[in-house]
Image (cartoon, rainbow, N blue to C red; front, side):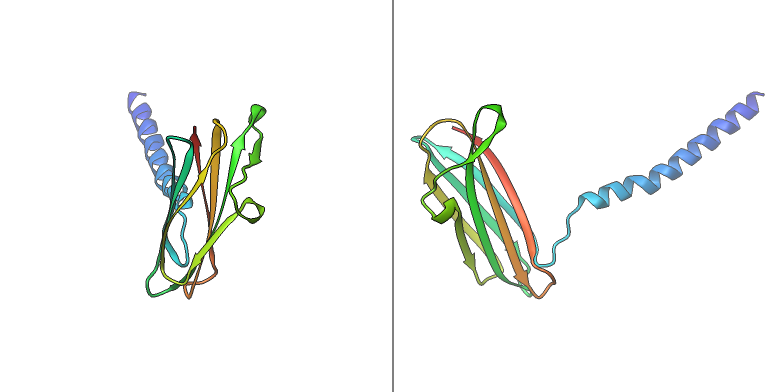
Length: 145
């Protein structure tokens, strides 16, 4: 009886190990994002004294593939009950746009905030090139002033 319990336990551990070796790598690969023309894209948001919101934008494409990088940026302020409203940033439709015909992009956007609160910055990058369909990458950052 003792031998049967040991064999059963070993069999269950072997099956569990087999199942884990199949499903754990599948979960990890689904979390990774693959792009056609981009290696990295990011933003970093800060508020300086006096309420100046500063956003550092950065995209690195693939030198032999990426031909154009476009950006669209907008800012929202959080109200009570978690409602986000657009913030006037001095651009048409409160959306700042920029683009380069290059494989890398680096820029800083700045605007004066009119009041304290929690702000959310959203940037959408459109990265074009010969690597395939355009990469559409959205980065969001939140900051409190």
